[in-house]
Length: 492
Image (cartoon, rainbow, N blue to C red; front, side, top):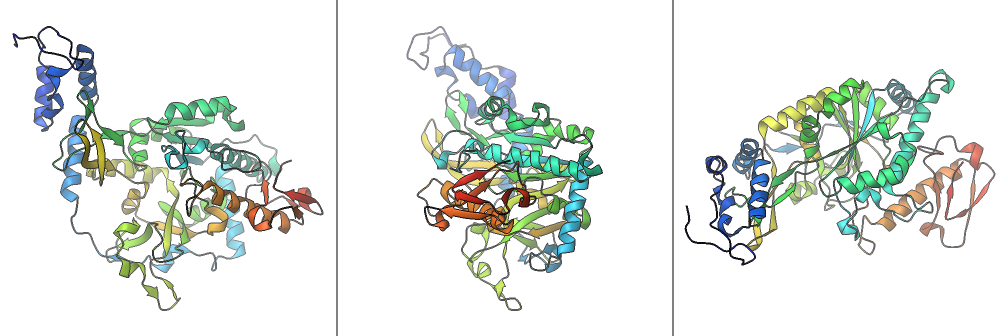
């Protein structure tokens, strides 16, 4: 026991500092993390209690396994990559109209049978957009002023109606599509409040389930915890691939099973054109009988900063290679038969999984415990410390899949990313808004409508409410022979 008084973090005199709990200290020593108590003598009683609770909340065996497995695998050589075989991809140019119609109807049937749920990855804040709110709260400036969350919710409502109308001429009760929304500790409360304030955008509150992804301690190059403050471990979200662990540990995989869900449509929040629960994609997925599938777009040019789907090793699994990991010579290789890039199928975070496969992935990722190590400057008690954030990505699931199919879509129809503030060169709210307006303008013209505009048409257009049409269908009765002045929103 110390006999001399010490000073707490505020400089005030205090009684002799009791040592940290011996059992907790021994547990930390077992995993080489006893430095978390390095500043114990300088902490106030409240800070000591906070640190104790902080350490007790950590699953030390699991975290130790993650750190060691990830550090050991970091930098190890990986199997050579090959282009995805053509037979794995349904391309737009080879897709027949009768196949599209058949898949659309198959998808609507599965939805009406309650077999589809939607899984939204929404853990990120809109920091790069100049907002601390969740990205889904962002209004990209459409005539309706709707947020990304509202656009997606209304597409779900429209899809429910289409599925109901596809059976018994719509006379049955609407089967709700359950919407699972992954938040993060930084966005969870704000997201829930946003939905409550907007009355779930017309959905029933009990068909929306929120859950938070986890966080993992940031570590130094030798695997030791980095301390954000003398009484707090620096932590970071575990990446969008944390969805698998979060679903497992929150009991939501069992929840899905109890609801009769067989298929999960999974997507990222920051795509203004996402076709949530796309029946055509779902029908294709069911028809192929695969465990996983992804929508892809053709890479625009060799240096485009997107991950691409590849085959890892001869006859190996289909997986994703990040743009930073793809050698420039490979990125520029041309398929002599088609004149196109050999590695051309871009990952745009639009995925479909069976529930059985999600269970397999959650167990496999936890067993292997290998995370991507992102080298970052991490705020710490020593200033900016160079260390690692441990992350998993949504595409980490694909190597576990016994079978994966890719489904090409057109950028201008399904991919309008909202990642950077207006004024940036790409993926801005302005660029996403124009993609939406241009697509909806084409729908209206195809349905027999006309447009007038007081600014050049390339910089404006019309917005079709998702409550009116999901993908351009059923617009003739509203649009034929009518003239709309752009910009405007077309509603019922």
